[in-house]
Image (cartoon, rainbow, N blue to C red):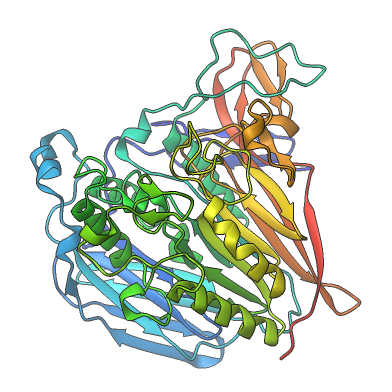
Length: 539
């Protein structure tokens, strides 16, 4: 077996040899995130959202309001050209507090936020499309693959993750790392190893590199994207990783995002004050366009994407104030004071509820493989799993989303993909897989249901903290443990005319030397995978 290693240590560049393979690796992120000279006109490089059976949206941001040109080409002479109409987005300006700290943050951007976005339809099916954006003297080029046919005739791959919670401070933060179950052959975790082996930034960057090597057709990001939606530098940090100087995965693989509780939080700019929440959500809504739903004011908060045989339904489970809830309804105590109209209700009978029911019925009618995505996981043993009214509850439980389970079962949902508890956990309820893949690049939580019976999760099938036993050889970590990672979703046609869907948890495993120093990362799929054989969708 050939293993590829990736080194993401700050300010390092090295290649590691394994067998007959040597992979030379790019320099890790440095204190300053500067675009290459030929891309300086871009504030955020072009990225892909709103995927559909025959369309995509290309979005980019610039410092100045000069129109740009988008050119797309594919085999057979297919070509499209568009001229952008830049729009000044004042809601993405740095708040006063952040502007006052500019001298301490050299990565803060100059100029204004000008948004360019082009919706492209009529894409040829199952083709590689090359695209280029010319913006003044700057240029950026990439390619993506269009949606396959609904009757799948080749393998396809999606990747899901959550809780990257980016912020510039993450370059120095090493998260608390609770001791998991020990392997019988382990010498035991060394004394003093209480924090994780790498920083949040290093872990997230390694995770993204492994995701990119697997070339997924879509990326599903299930909320908690930044460390506070009202914190503009946190959004800058996200795009440094995703469509910027450090990496560009969403420039190549279309992104389907869900809003999380951290996107409903002003962070340093007002916390949970209603106006701060509104400002935070407006930033999210400005960055991520999605297909329309049934309520104009709720646009981009819940949405549907069809990609070949798969329908992805994304819901907004936050309802605005997840830290201030009333009983088990997850309603907002301060809803009357909220200055916007973009807070969809999750309750039965609400507009979002009715929309979800109609979309699920339509997808089932057409034989689609249905995946649902939202942030607050309803079945889990993690730290947010106590009922909202229970003593010691975080006030952010996903339990209210259990109301949707009968609907999901009735319409044949295959999987529900979430984050929030950050414990990397798979459960199964009435044959539906529930995943918490909230280990993109922030906390590394542990399930607490084994020590607190009030949080019992009888549906649990796998959790990294317990099922991936740590094996240590002195100061060197050999295998096991909980790490930053993602969920890989592979679909393949089978000889009997069905589709096999395989869910594989994957870790970005830190490779340590004899002294316990991290020298690189290895992609480590866990041994436990989850497979479902499903009917092939109809044309």
